Image (cartoon, rainbow, N blue to C red; front, side, top):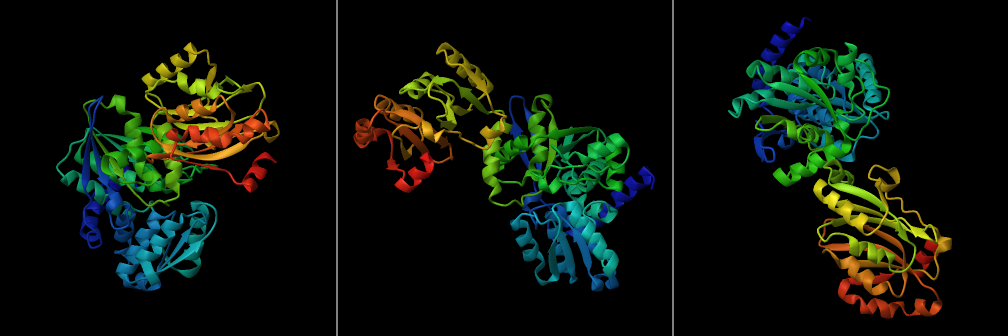
Amino acid sequence: MDTKNLHYRLQQGILEASKRVYEVGGATPLDHITLSKPSVELFVKREDISPIHAYKWRGAYNRMAQLTTEELNGGVVTSSAGNHAQGVALAACKLGTRAIIYMPLSTPRMKQVAVKRHGGDHVEIRLHGDSYDNASAAAHKCAAESGLTYIHPYDELAVMSGQGTLADEIVTSGQGPFDVAYLQVGGGGMAAAVASYLKNQFPSIRIVGVEGEGQASMAAAIKAGEPVTLDQIDVFCDGTAVRKVGTLTHQICAEVVDEWMVVSNDEVSAAIQFLWEELRCIPEPSGAMGVAAVLKHRSKLANQSVLTVLCGANMDFEQLATIAGRSAVGAARRRYLKIQIPEKPGAMYRLLESLPETISIMDFQYGKTDTQGASPVIGFDLLPTDFKVLCQALELSNFAFSEVTSESDVSFRLIHYEPKLLVYPIFITLEFHERPGVLAEFLRVLSPHSNLCYFNYVYSGERVGRALLGFEFEDREQYGKFDQVLDSAKHAFRDCRRVSEDTMKRIVS
């Protein structure tokens, strides 16, 4: 199909789809955020508050609403990493047909539960393979053998037209025209339809296609001149993790997308935090990719009106911990330094005392591995200007240091220590008020009596901090006086407990 005809059919399809999709759900809002330094007017299309908390219901229902009575009676089959599956389930329930849905074995539990909630007895979930491609191959095989109608997640005009209805809502919101739109790309259905429609309505708009690191299959297709299959894909942004884009989506995106860019998983995590702080919403990683790109290009967008789509919010709760840990790194606020100090009593306290009062410690990783020198890893949450101040303070105090933000053992919090080097050790769990200087004050009291041999702390966002600390002593007499020393430092903590004897045996064995 020639591109001009394809665009025309897509434009008409979007207008016709608008008559169908609103049988299932209404228009979603376009929220406005004003960024400063530089000033940017950001508009976010809130597909996260749609019937399935993602835009995929639009395409699935538009396609299935056009099935014949015979096709509906026979049933449908599809493959999905999660959101398209929910759209098909919702449509199957609404239209009274049955749907077999193939999903990867690794599909988040929450998305599986949501599919059953939307489809009920109308859906059957079949978990197959380790990737979307495995599930897709199984679904196509099922369709061929059983005669069921296959509902493609993206590479079909009726599906794309339904997804493009969100662009029609953007145009009729009255907020345009926009200077630039950042659209995340997986298989390319939403990006192709929305970009085509926006270009038709706002001819001067610039479209930026956004892909996640390790999954830039559309950019690879554009470069090759045809869809190609990636050998490996990163699945942190699982909603856009597609090895090979569609034929139709590639044809459209190649014409209407002006620029391609990649965002890292850390940058996506930072965007999720940004959206929580600005709109009190928590998108799934793929849903935040467009905003991540805006924040990455922020300095280039001064005085511009910028559009993006928050395309989904279906994420397992357990993933929030990972996202919270990566967000500060993605926002270029979290920096980790490995700092060299002597392995002797009081050294850690002197290090903490040398730090500027304005610096916040978010992570502390240390275990004794040498009798002469220590190398604690400390994570700081700070602005670039504050990082310079921190480095200057360390240099003035003659501390050697190196940045280790990107090292794997730091991100996985692998705290190395050598149990055989610990002399009369005692481990405690410490609970304290989260305020600057409190840990330094605690160590100031204990330093003359013991040596810190282990330190494990990470900021949790609570008003109370918790840490696992290890101390060692020169002799058994000092070891026996530890409880008295703790009592003298009780002003610096809320609660302090010794680790049990059984746990101590495992620590030092």
